[in-house]
Length: 496
Image 1: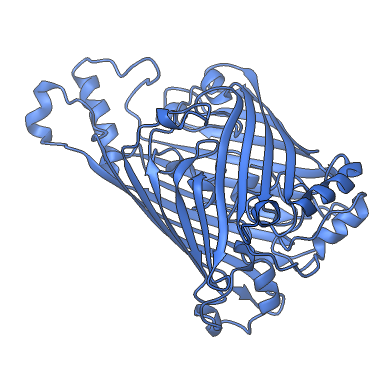
Image 2: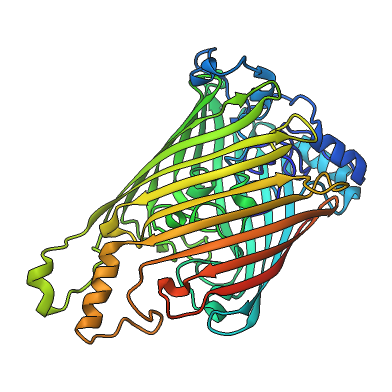
């Protein structure tokens, strides 16, 4: 997922998606200086029904009432920052299309065509040295069904993409569970993969927002704009998005989400989704080929305070998901000689708990939620008996304008620790003790791993971002048998 310089959304933005905008919905202009100025000082939004204009059930605050006086204008403008699929760049490479874009938007159709390319090389450690390239071309569309067919308030969102390339983790590092480059499809390349396609509408005087259709869960739950400036953790932490129930881009799932805003500083999001294997339906079009095994029941509560006289925003999320699918115990098939001592392992459903937080620590370049530097942290816990990763802990920073003369560059660094389920480790150790093979991709009982990622994002021109990346993979393959790997690379983001 991309670097952002203002909080931008493609799924629920107030301006047409073709006119990449700040969180408030301000439309980009055609040269660098005006664009950067509008990103730093976005005007007040035009009020269009969407999650961004969700009204409160009660005109009050919760925990924030104990901290500082409210700033309702700022809170309303940036209400949904970071909780949807973000647009990929700020501005467009072809500003001459602004007129046709506006004409189409006035008729009810908005679009964004974007490119994301990643070249990542393993330069030390791992299995061997080498480089892989992968890219993604995405067409994001929005149809205003009120203008098109008279369904007032209804929006139809659809995303189609082409993906190709290889994964450096598999080819050169020796890591199979953690993807070290972002653009890599779960099921290989796809010429025209259909991802999200869903309807959106607000009800009851804009106090309830509904999304229903085929939706990617990790672009609604456990995500943020800041997480998606990193390659490894986008669109959600690895321990969460690697599991079947939490569908991850480009895999969408049938279901729906309801979002309400009880008070000005709280958002509650919940829904019901089908749970199906992540690698099924590789094209996204063969809906009948998916085999649902249960339902995923997620819920997330977000507290969004603003601290101090500079109104420094924070996002504190607590979430839970229950997948009713029956999963086998990850201990696997226990050798006969050990079955009596180990006991019965029947498996069952899977629960996930997560806490994620980011807090702005300084403000620079404007009053919107991306105008400044953040500290970030999170923790994920899964049912150990039915999950590959039982726990993950991460912390990092995303800092804007740290070098003089470069006010809109963003530097990010993140460390993450991954704990393999003790059940999986035990099962592998028993097989090794019995002289059995663990398979061609596992070189010993797996216990834990860690990653360190750093990037520096540079807005070259409107619609183009260059992002050098550094990664350090500790314990590839979740064992100590493969040397730690050092990777460098470049991500390029472009929007037509």
